Image 1 (spheres, rainbow, N blue to C red):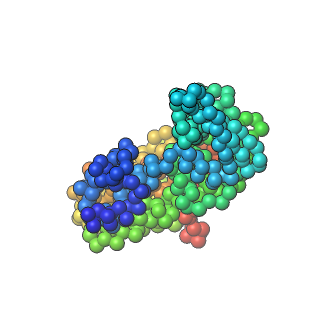
Image 2 (cartoon, rainbow, N blue to C red; image 1 turned 60 degrees about the vertical axis):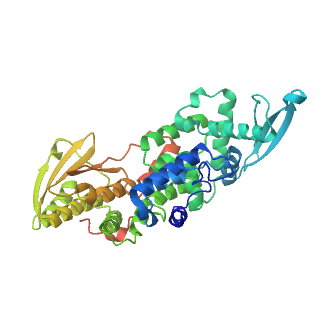
Length: 424
C-alpha cells in the first residue's frame, strides 16, 4: 500500500482517482472506476518504473480528467479565466409535492454586456440540480463548434454561443501554464486541436467560429495570438512536455538512457534549424559521414515531385538519419534509406537490419511527432518512417484560423545563431 500511495503522489492523481467499491463511504463515479482500472493495468505492466516516469498516454489521459468537478464548478472556472461573472436566479414552480426550480444564469462579460440563459426543469428538481442542468447546457453549447454541431443549434443557442465566444476573445488576458493546461483539456478556443497538431480540425473549428461571429468580427486580439504561441510551446518543450519528462528520466537502465538521448536529439533538431539547403543536401551530408561507419543503401525518388518541407524540418530529417545510423552502427549492420514524395509530403523510409527497432526508436519517434511542426514519425518492426508535411495553405484562411496556424508553424525553440552558415 505504501508503494501504491507513492505512485498516487508521483502521478499527481486527482482526488478520488483511486476510489473504488468498498474503499470509500462515498459512492464512486463511473470515471473514477475507469481511472482506477487504467492505473492498475499500468502498474501491473510497468511496476515500479511508474515511480520514475509517467507514461505519456497515461499522463495525457489523467491531465484531461475533470470528473471530480460538477458542471457549475467547471463553468465557474472557465468564466473566471475570461473575466466573466455570473449569478443564478431561481424560480419555483409546481405544486407542493412536485416542486421544481428553474435556474437562470445571468452572465456578464468583461465589457459589461449581459446575457441570460435558463433550462426548463425536467421533473422535480432542487436549486442545486437546476444550477447543474443550466451550467451543463451552457458547456455543451460552447463545445458545439468542435463537433460541427453549430448548424443544429437553435437561434437562441447560437446567440448564446456567439456571446460566449466573443466574451472569451474580449476577456482573454495573460495566462499561466496551469490555466493553459485547463484550457487545452477543456477544448477552449481550439487550443486542444493545436496542441495535438490536428491542423485540419483546428482550421474547421476556426472557420465555423469566424462565420458564427459574423461580418462585424474584429481581428483576433494579441492575447489570443500569444495564448496560441504559448500553448504550442508548452506542448513541445514546456516543463510538462513529453521531451522535458524524458530528459528528466533519472533511471540507470538502458531504456532510461535511450529516453534521455532521444530527448537531447530532438532538442538538437529544434536548435539546428532552419537551414537554407535542400533535402538532398541534408541526406548527402549524412551519407558522407555514415558510409565510413556502416553500410548505406540509398534510393532517391524525389525527382518525380518537388519536396518543399519547412526549413525547420531539415534539422529533424538530419537527426532522424543520425539516430538510425547510430543504431545500425551499434549493431554492426547496415541501413537502407528511400526518399519519396506523395502529395507534397516527404516520406523517408529507413530500414534497419538486425536492430530491435521499437526499443531503439519508439521514444525518439514519439518525441518527433509531439515536438516538431508538421511532422510525424512511425516505427515498425524493421523500419522507421519519417513524414515531413508541407506548410498548410493560409492564404484563404480566416484571421482566426491564420492566428492559430501561424503559432503552430512558429518554432520558438529555434536559435538564429546556429543557422548563419546555412549548412547542416
